[in-house]
Amino acid sequence: MVTNILILCCTLLAFWGLIFDPKSYSFRKMSSFLLVLFAVELIGLSFTTDMNSGLSHIEKKSVFFLLPLVFSMNDLSSKHNIWKIWDFYLLGILVVILYCFFFAIYRVYSGEEAGMWGVNEFFTLKLPSAVNMSHVQFGLNVSIALLFSIHQFFCISIERQTKKLFYGASFIILSVILVLIMAKTAIIATFVAVAWILIVSKGINVSKLLIVSSIFVFFFATAIVLFPPLKSRWEQILSSKETVLVNDKRNYYSTRVTTLSCAFKIAQENFLTGIGTGDSRRFLNNCYIESGMNDFMDYDSHCQYLDYIIRLGILGIAALIFVLITPFVYSLFYNRDILQTCIFGILILCLFTENMFDISKGVLAYSFFYCFLTSSNNLNS
Image (cartoon, rainbow, N blue to C red):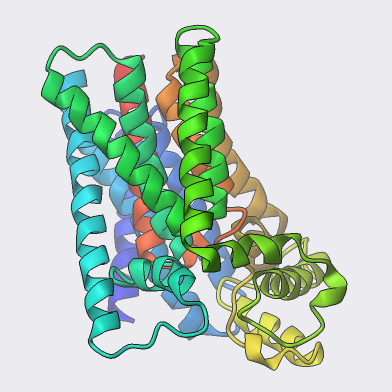
């Protein structure tokens, strides 16, 4: 309670500075749009019944105004600093992947059974769990780092050969990891983004497009051949609805059908005002019980857009779409930065299959890139 009172006070101070001191904190900086999402969450808190869950949401979303505040007071001073931050992020991802890989191996060999999923479970569950992430969140970070390495290797003239080799090696390592962890949304979004970068950056460069496409296809096909359990996830996506009649939360298709059907039902019934910031879990659990799918208790909607409709109604989804689309359109049409456009696109797509804002790590990762890229946009303009 004390923490949330402090968060609320900081929010009021941030809005005060926004209105009365535009030089230090201005709407000109699109990172401040995240304050809109936080304000809507506060409005939803006023009519929620589960205050504990509601306050927990507010605590996680506090990053929505803390990071914009930090970035607005510390503008990026040069392109050189931007690339230094990018390089540090890429190197950090490679170190994290190495740590996760050895930690996951240690857990398996120390007595933890791989279970029925075998290799699939190792890469989709154990690897991301080493840093307490879902494979979608882990894949999001990997895909963003991969996109940067591709951009630097193919689209930027780099004099130092060692740095060129570093970006090339990073591209290969991150491609392999992205395929193995089976983050399907991240894989599809990255593939589309890579094609977009190569086409837009230097015209329709067919040779480069074919090279990158071939590498992705090769890694994917090799993974399926060498690790047969990996294909189970893709088979489940293509399975018909008639085959998913059991209460099997390990089945990908069954999980999506159950969570999305309940989420759609609740959203249709409460699309005007929503049910409040903290009540979505209770409503979803009631729906799972009514459907006889008790094993799915405490599962979220697996779609951030549906989650905002359920909790905050029309106002919530309108604010979310506005905050997401504004910098994407700005990067695409005004600033014409293909790297930033693609990264915003990946962030937008990943919210279709994961409630990124329900977990502190997801809120922090998304808010960081939002503020970092919009600040960079301001510098470029």
